[in-house]
Image (tube, rainbow, N blue to C red; front, side):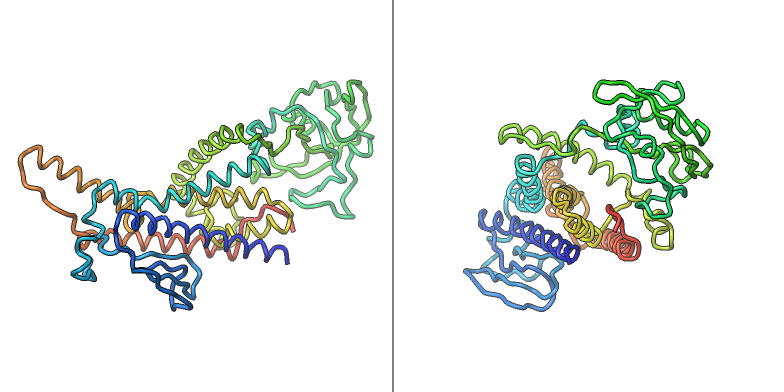
Length: 415
């Protein structure tokens, strides 16, 4: 029930974000004197609507977004009444049209920034010093969290009654002990401990540890398990030794800030998110084969793109596992990504319209500089083939991600 609630809440959050995106276009257009005839949440048949002034507001049956109708976005629009000719969007100055077309993305960025600041103050943001990768974790001190068992086969799951007990627990090691040596081989980092333990033979080993500033030793009967080589999650497995411990990280995963400090933390997180978003967008083409493979039976790569369906499912998992911080960070990341993606200079995205607006302006400047007459406005009809290609590719990619999120979704928690 909690999972379903989380899915619904996240889907609703997405719908609200998209509706506010369209509201950003509407409010700025009205502010500049452009005529907005319709603002609707959803698509398809109209469920309910009302008119205020010259604009009809309403709700449609398919809750997959929203739209607003600004009269005369392009010179080719043929539904402009004679009395509205002076208010068509394409006649307004470049800077005003740019603001109107970018207002949707600015709304997404605003939502992300406000949510980030609130999260920094009341919930906490991810600790920048917390290891975020296996390579970083290997550099942490070898402070251990003792497990209940060892899983012999190379799978990730919770302990079962048939699994052998953890050698570390049997030997008397405790959570928070720092491993200093294994059979005399010195250990400084978690990576050192992994290499030394896996390099040992299964069986009795002398473990030197530090607890509360005092050094001690225990005899542990290292278990024989099947694992791939370190750093190769999907490589061939072999029999290696295991102590039955995990890495214990003393640093908090989330850090809260005061109201003023939160501005700096928000800026730092936004910078990292911007870099990560650009890198993720650049990797999309190379991830398509992995997406297709996940549909045809391969394991789903956690680094593959997700759709709003996948994001909503992750939101459901977050709520089901009482991980509201993950729910909030997913909402922030999605808004930031949509804001950036929407500014790509491709029709029919807002960024495509902005690119044409400035292309027209720069072309007019250039023609004036060389003494030639202004060539006028871009003919959008000539760009329709390219627009159709973008729609076709975008539609195919959306179908691919939605299918993967339905048949082989990414999961962050073991259920």
